Length: 169
Image 1 (tube, one colour):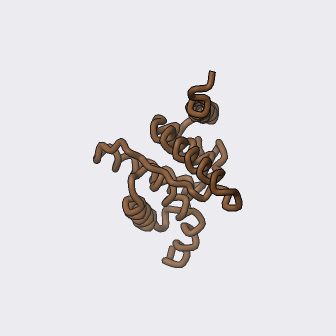
Image 2: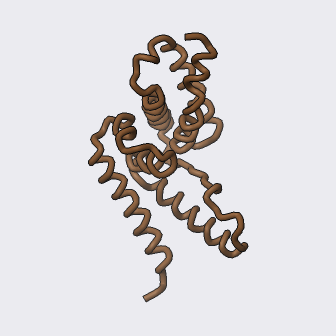
């Protein structure tokens, strides 16, 4: 496989690799480094890449494992997400502030979720992966993924309900 063929193969999912790395690691720089490292590892497999049924799933699995290894080695517990692109740009300032506040709360809640639930939320709700693809990447069965996703969403919903109902009896 030459360089052009490799670029054509990895370009469709390169941004997904970065976003997953960004979700798990603390900074943009670390996510960029992780993405670069994954691409180098994929390049080193060169001709063997076509043996995988889904190169994208393989790359996402590599990214997950690499990032978790990085986190273990650094013993970092502060994971950060930023999704300001979900705000409605045509709404009034007050609505924007409420949306931003809610988004910040959701980020804080997701930060407190177990790593597996964070990964599933990222892949399903942000990256729009199908359950079958997530099952391959995380090496889990689909029903376990559905249960973990349901629990993660329920945790987020419960925290948000508690936050919005605070002081109201």
